[in-house]
Amino acid sequence: MGKNRFPVWRLIQSELEAEIRSGLIGPGDQLPSENDLAERFAVNRHTVRTALANLAMVGMVRARRGRGVFVEDRPPEYRINRDSKWSEIERQMNAAPSARVIDASERAASSSVGGLLGLAEGTPLLLVESVRGAAPALLIYSYHVLEHVRFAGIDAAVRRTGSFTEALAEFGVDQFFRTSTWIDCRMPRPREAEALAIPLDAPVLVMMYVDSDAESRPLLYGNAVIPSGSLILRIDTL
Image (tube, rainbow, N blue to C red; front, side):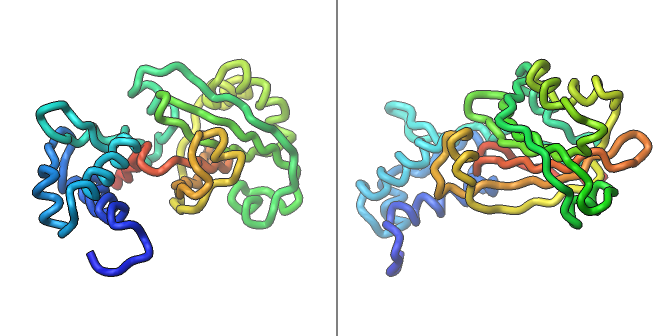
């Protein structure tokens, strides 16, 4: 494997994880035996066993007694298109609305966020932080930024309904659509890591987006913080 500052088992785990995530080894496929992997990576079986144990710990594989190690099902897909909404994931997994408000605060619009929302710099905004989940292993930490004057009290509506879609409906927004999406990666903030039950050194995917109303007026700016491996983002172009 060559010299590296990382443990050899971690390098093996990374290689196998990349092959699984890319689909080269698909859901339900059996991994090569410990002997075959030890030969492939020129290591002993104990090192391979450690790598496999860590893949199992993050939910990517499962050992079946007497049969071998098999790849688990792929994480659910979040489709990024005009109709993107977290409620689609909830429906896909037969889950009830589950938004839990962590914090709500007021702040002035920066030039960048104000520009995205079509508001002047300094306009009062409402920032609502929440945790949403469609399964025990599928949680996201969300930030919703909206114009304070128009949506004052929407955090109470989210607390009551558990759903931003339902809360927006109470404010007269029956339809809204995704108009822009950006995807980035970073380390989690302490409050995000605590809410998502992940280590502070575990990278997270961040989906930033703008939703607009039926008249194409910017409605909200959102950030969804997604633990690595828990959700696959699918971008549909047609």
